[in-house]
Image 1 (cartoon, rainbow, N blue to C red):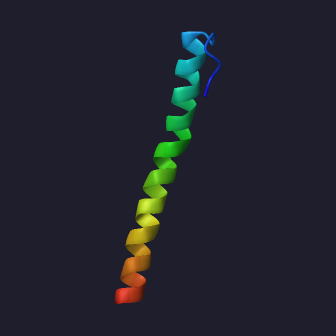
Image 2: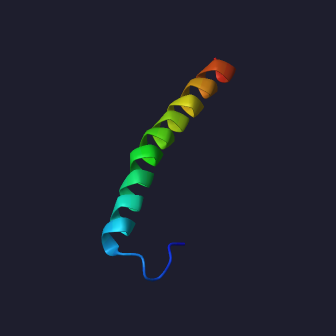
Length: 42
Protein backbone atom coordinates (compact mmCIF):
# COMPACT_ATOMS: atom_id res chain seq x y z
CA UNK A 1 0.00 0.00 0.00
CA UNK A 2 1.22 3.49 -0.71
CA UNK A 3 2.06 5.72 2.17
CA UNK A 4 -1.03 7.74 3.27
CA UNK A 5 0.58 11.09 2.45
CA UNK A 6 1.64 10.07 -1.07
CA UNK A 7 0.54 12.78 -3.52
CA UNK A 8 -2.39 11.82 -5.78
CA UNK A 9 -0.32 12.33 -8.92
CA UNK A 10 2.16 9.73 -7.71
CA UNK A 11 -0.67 7.29 -6.98
CA UNK A 12 -2.12 7.88 -10.44
CA UNK A 13 1.28 7.24 -12.02
CA UNK A 14 1.65 4.04 -10.04
CA UNK A 15 -1.81 2.85 -11.09
CA UNK A 16 -1.04 3.69 -14.71
CA UNK A 17 2.26 1.79 -14.54
CA UNK A 18 0.52 -1.29 -13.13
CA UNK A 19 -2.08 -1.16 -15.89
CA UNK A 20 0.61 -0.61 -18.54
CA UNK A 21 2.28 -3.86 -17.48
CA UNK A 22 -0.70 -5.78 -16.15
CA UNK A 23 -3.07 -5.56 -19.10
CA UNK A 24 -0.67 -7.02 -21.68
CA UNK A 25 0.40 -9.62 -19.14
CA UNK A 26 -3.21 -10.64 -18.51
CA UNK A 27 -3.87 -10.81 -22.25
CA UNK A 28 -0.77 -12.93 -22.78
CA UNK A 29 -1.78 -15.33 -20.03
CA UNK A 30 -5.27 -15.59 -21.53
CA UNK A 31 -3.81 -16.41 -24.95
CA UNK A 32 -1.45 -18.94 -23.36
CA UNK A 33 -4.33 -20.75 -21.69
CA UNK A 34 -6.31 -20.75 -24.95
CA UNK A 35 -3.37 -22.22 -26.94
CA UNK A 36 -2.49 -24.76 -24.25
CA UNK A 37 -6.10 -25.91 -24.10
CA UNK A 38 -6.13 -26.41 -27.87
CA UNK A 39 -2.79 -28.23 -27.72
CA UNK A 40 -3.85 -30.71 -25.06
CA UNK A 41 -7.46 -31.27 -26.14
CA UNK A 42 -6.87 -31.49 -29.88
